[in-house]
Length: 228
Image 1 (tube, helix red, strand yellow):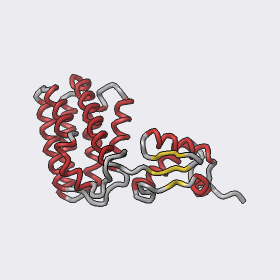
Image 2 (cartoon, rainbow, N blue to C red):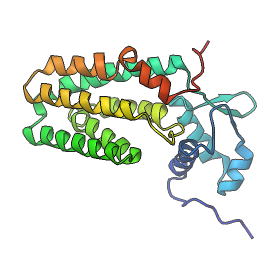
Image 3 (cartoon, rainbow, N blue to C red):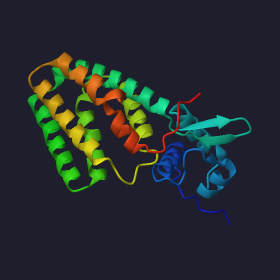
Image 4 (tube, rainbow, N blue to C red):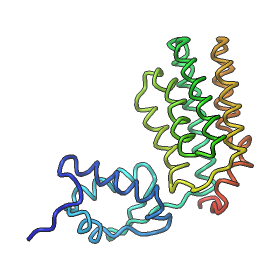
């Protein structure tokens, strides 16, 4: 009798992708570990085709490296990676905010304020997961108005690479508190119509590796050196 697949037969590639990402998020697949295609396809009850397609997507997003002879290695996150992601996200979110600025209504700004207040309460309750989710939604308010879904997808993938690989069990409370203050400053700049100052704040403060470095090093205590 054939083994029953663990996955739904619809959109197998996407389901395999989500399975592997969840394994990375929870630390079941750690940076530096190898993914055995034969073993994984048998475990999931799928052919190698959707698995290979999912791995190709993960490679494009820099989560894995596919080496000769079907050797797949989960990529480690280096200091150079973090610096580069911060630079890219800062530039993209800054540009997105400028593009979205005129479309933001008072109700959207009020929503950002409510989300920031939710984040403050979540940190007060030491609920990092709630903070993390609200933080993504906060940024999505203005990202959603930029008119460039490819930009939004790229930014969100890089954030997953930074903060969800695997998700840290603890968090750096003073970093989240500082981030909430940065959000508040951003809200006030948007509310008062200071588009360029708001965009600069996103790029030069909120996503500045230099500004955030002391927190980054606490969040990633075992971060490896710059990639060669």
